[in-house]
Amino acid sequence: MVYRSEPLDPARHDLSGFDSGEPELDRWLRDHAAGAGARRVARTFVWVEPDSHPDRAVGYYSLAGHRLIREDLPRSIGRGSPTEVPAVLLARLALDRIHHGGGNGGALLADALARIVVATDIVAARFVVVDALHEKAAGFYQHHGFRRIPDTRRLIQKVSDIAAALDVD
Ligand SMILES: CC(C)(COP(=O)(O)OP(=O)(O)OC[C@H]1O[C@@H](n2cnc3c(N)ncnc32)[C@H](O)[C@@H]1OP(=O)(O)O)[C@@H](O)C(=O)NCCC(=O)NCCS
Image (tube, rainbow, N blue to C red; front, top):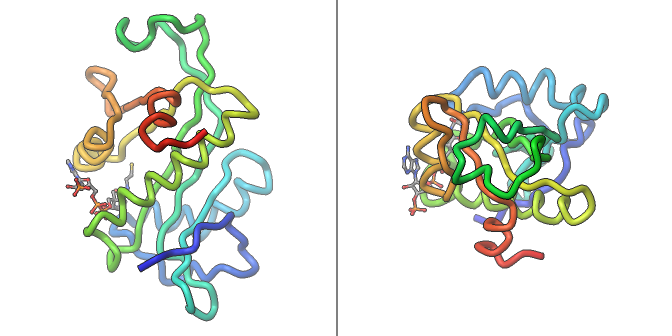
């Protein structure tokens, strides 16, 4: 199925039935995503099922600016960075359970990363950062090229590597 990817519009998008299997992520979308957007704390984008009325959200991700400290990074990753490194935080990402599998989660992640590459042409960031909710999620991000910061569930990937992999400029 081809989904529409669009900025969250609480007046139009139906979030009521969203069920990713992670209640915390479902509640955040329903109760906090719009407020976070209004306060410019995080931008949320949703996937909408074509031909659904009202526009039903079946996936989402949230993005925010972030700052990494080079000393906190493994040397092989931090090399070449300034002391404080601009980054983008992939703060949340979830797909409705009905749509799990078959590469949909990977496609949702690719959509988020493509938006980040475009955004960082205007506001620079060197890395994308994600704090995985659990080991299974960490495995998903590692599968997609993120490198884990040892002894944490924090994973990062260079924006330049993402741009090259996605062929986005
Ligand atoms: C995480 C989530 C988006 C993944 O979506 P999905 O549709 O189940 O995953 P996909 O089918 O797209 O899997 C994509 C690829 O990652 C791989 N993958 C998925 N989970 C993995 C894991 N735990 N370890 C390693 N690889 C994994 C798949 O094998 C697949 O590989 P392929 O593209 O080479 O076939 C989805 O399970 C979800 O919304 N979960 C609830 C919310 C959540 O946990 N979010 C993460 C919060 S940090």
